[in-house]
Image 1 (cartoon, rainbow, N blue to C red):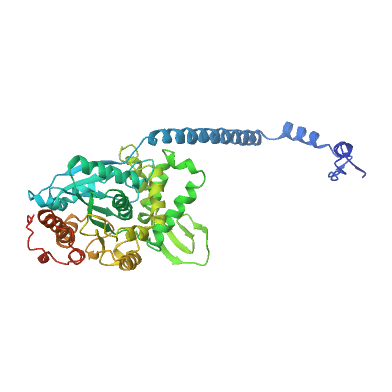
Image 2 (cartoon, rainbow, N blue to C red):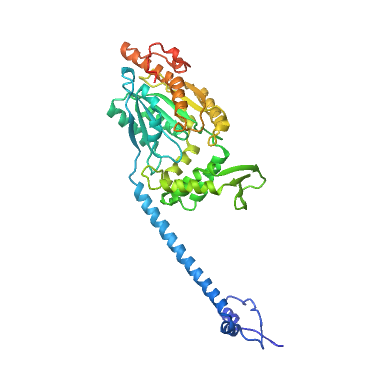
Length: 444
């Protein structure tokens, strides 16, 4: 049998100066040419095979069309998301007026902030009625556009001017703690007439290693998904992804340490990432997806952009710089802000923040810079006053407010005596209400 070479392709390539073409696969002379084989096959193939081929081509076409629709949906969704948050700013809601008629508290207020995945802390602030004992109570709502702590500081300053507030305390839960610390620093640097009495960091991540491994990996996964395109955070439906990832502790359980780094899928419910193997609870995931989906249309829902900014803030905030600035007494102040770190009694009760590491980082910094401080543990879990209102009320009234009241008393004494040289560092560090004999407060 003689072999006949197909030369047309080779000749054409050589003629335009590309050098000799790769030798085509030879076709036997007494066999049909390729196009003849295809013609014969199509003429005689079973109808079922023809149907399959048609379906396959249709599937490819449908996939291409579907990808086009998805791209258009994401693109238009991103533009709509940007437009929705373009002019959004932080805002403040008055939750309670003071529950105490004493003039000591008439110019003091507490501002409540919450953490990752939250936008409006009003519901949390409503739970914290104990703050009424020492003044009015406000909730600081974040902007869905970004996390601009300078703007939030200005919002507090404007509210203070409007309501004749001279003394403020900040009560931050989880990531709301370091956010409150940053806001306080802005106020401390630029508003000498507004005195910061206390800053409370409740179960807050502070410094390196402050998140549990699960929380860190949740943020890593979120960043990996959002790294596909930087503007994906504005995609309305992207909020579902970011919010569900933020709740990963509810449907992922760590099983064991493995040698493999990166991502590996073992079966439909088991995978590993960065050396840890996890069990994936599909039923619980479905519950979280359903819950998040129900909240997507609520006006107080955190956008993907806000969640991303909150997660980045946890990692990048310079808490040591803030504490250093807050350790220098300003002209006109007679007390430094007391910084309080609260936590669960047992680290295992907080699955979001590594409270042992956070406490250590916090103490190392405040002792280096000389900030008045306290560390308080209690029968709580991770920043959950809504679930344990009585426990948080007791912790606030018995262990935090004595420090707040002591500072307010000293400011009141200075105002009445005209003495601006009182040193209250020791007073701020007092541990019991007995140290404040001039104070009376409602029991309830």
